[in-house]
Length: 371
Image (cartoon, rainbow, N blue to C red):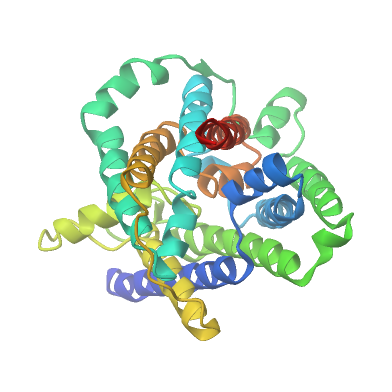
């Protein structure tokens, strides 16, 4: 490839990511796809419909990603999720903070973007606070504290922390075969559970689960296949185009929100370029807005009072800090991360779910106390 071809390929990566993210926003708006909502439905109502939708998305993402690994299109090791250093305490604590925060803020990072597209001004405030707190946890004062405390507790594994790499190291089997077997097996088990009951086979559940899962796979393909250069013409080294981490990136909505704010604030700085994550943030809002307007669901909504405002601000802060600490959110770790079969991603997801349950029960306790 010639260096003159790079702008065209970069544009293809960005436009593809924007389109996929818009599809994510439209599907999430149409089907009410929401991890926090799924947890709340189970705790408050005993309703597992949205959790089955989420499991369907996870299964599709897992099968799709590992099929691409088997084909040689992508490698988990090229992502941030599958390195040999397992930050187990950061994954758990960060996930716990994020899970609690998403309940207080009425939704996770992706749901916040979807709600903005539907006219929710509260979510716009949440997004700004999330962006600032996430950036501070990546590069500011909170980053120093994070690295010196939670990140200092880690385990260095003999291979990447994704299960296929670990088993390949232990058994000598081919990593691609293990990825296909494990990813296919676990993914199909999730699909089977999601579809086992009638509510999991409802139209919205199928659209939400299969649609969101397919978008996650699509973003992996765009970043890891379309945007991958085996030899960058300027450096003669492997490169992934239009990513903030300079690695293969999956769909996520914590660090990219911070990078989007950084791009807006420092737009005149030529070193700040559009990336896959930044355009994905915009795409979700656009897709959600288009769906809300088409269905007549667009409604302006503001804070109900001081307590409502405080809850959302604290929730946004916890999501920003927790999402960066855990290396992802309900989408970043909960779908993109676990699709790589990363141990850290499973730990982060466990923390997010535990925090979500705690947050829902805390809100229920506050309601009962006020009666």
